[in-house]
Amino acid sequence: MKNEIVVDKNPKSSVAEAIRIIRTNLEFSGIDKKVKSVLITSSIPSEGKSFISSNLATSFAQNGSKVLLMDCDMRKGRLHKIFGIENERGLSNLLLEDIETSFKDFIKKTDIDNLYLLPKGVVPPNPSELLNSPKTKALIHVLSDKFDYVILDGTPVNGLTDSLILTKYVDKTVIVATLNYTKTNEFEFTKKSLISVGADIAGVVVNKTADVHSGYYGNYYE
Ligand SMILES: Nc1ncnc2c1ncn2[C@@H]1O[C@H](COP(=O)(O)OP(=O)(O)OP(=O)(O)O)[C@@H](O)[C@H]1O
Ligand SMILES: [Mg+2]
Image 1 (cartoon, rainbow, N blue to C red):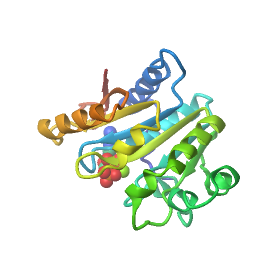
Image 2 (cartoon, helix red, strand yellow; image 1 turned 90 degrees about the vertical axis):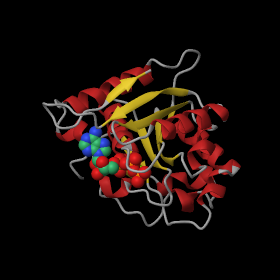
Image 3 (cartoon, rainbow, N blue to C red; image 1 turned 45 degrees about the vertical axis):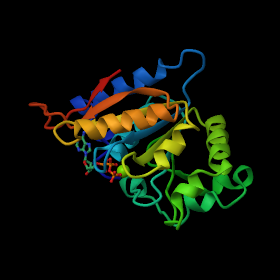
């Protein structure tokens, strides 16, 4: 496993503390019903969606919850690399099977107790269409039933419909933005697009803000 899982490798760091604050906010964000599924998205590439989703999923697992981390970036997803897990078969392959009977065959245990990964699988020719199928909705429903939390690592909103589709199937959406990198108009476009499809936005994580003590820091605003 790579050192990117700071909540495991460096739990006392300010980044790990910020991740735990995001977790607590999510735990308390469901008013009528408990939040079970959370999509992590952003405006543009490299803002830290995979970093935040994998650390957040680990943090939920460390807190005693049974967690599934789902790599929904079927094009460029790298969660299997972060956790050192095979990607021969994953989400793209599972969506072609009978969900109820075969989902267990595609989910892998990670080195973190209580944390399971559904890797992205082979790159399909039509990722957006696959995500738009009723099977994806059914899959998230089944997984939310079997796990305490399902964390979805998505694609950027600018230029791709994948994450907009997924918001329909999850309880909450978190937007990651990077200080001095994400442009205001890009962020505004993302927010508007998510709102227009009815996404329930839990908050915005401002990632990679300079912190004199640790080099990197994450912040959370509602
Ligand atoms: N808070 C942070 N502290 C240190 N490194 C970070 C932090 N956030 C992200 N990174 C690093 O920045 C790089 C890009 O992050 P990441 O892959 O998570 O972005 P992404 O939004 O998932 O990108 P993509 O759109 O390509 O999927 C990675 O090398 C990651 O380890
Ligand atoms: Mg990513």
